[in-house]
Length: 206
Image (cartoon, rainbow, N blue to C red; front, side, top):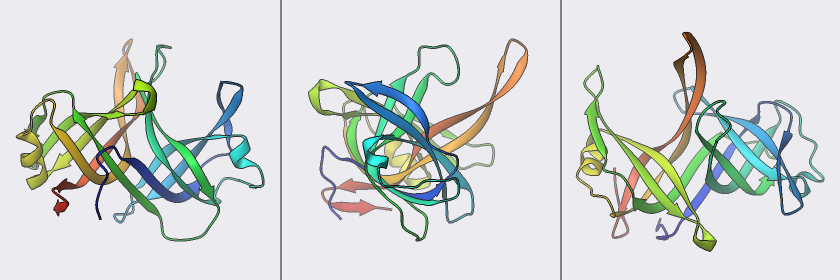
């Protein structure tokens, strides 16, 4: 499958984890937050935040546990409230469907490397590479997405430079971690793109 060089497209299929709740309003349009759980092949569940307009939910009867398929794009938002994570990552819905099926989490993304990649090894000896990818939107805006690669892909990503263009396939995943604030441990959720393959002249490198 070819990836467009300005791509930001995600397909999620999972189950609603909680009832839709108010998110924000923009240009007179009200948006709702839909937490979605998507199961990986390993059995681990990612809990991802989907944002959709009230109009998109018309005609849908959504309750916790209901199946939901989402087609849209990944967006970032800088949280300046001082509460929770500084970088908020969510899925902006273009289309919503209620249909049964196997869980799915497929992301096609392309952008520009905006910070030097960080290549390291885990305590168990696995090679891992962290990157930040700038993905352009229309109207001159961009989303800055943390990406992670493992094994041979990590080595390849570690050899890249700031300004390099990257096209990838992967998934958006959630990860729980603890942070100490004022002497107390707080549990938080981080979101990142797990890279499954890179596109190079139309060919995927696994």
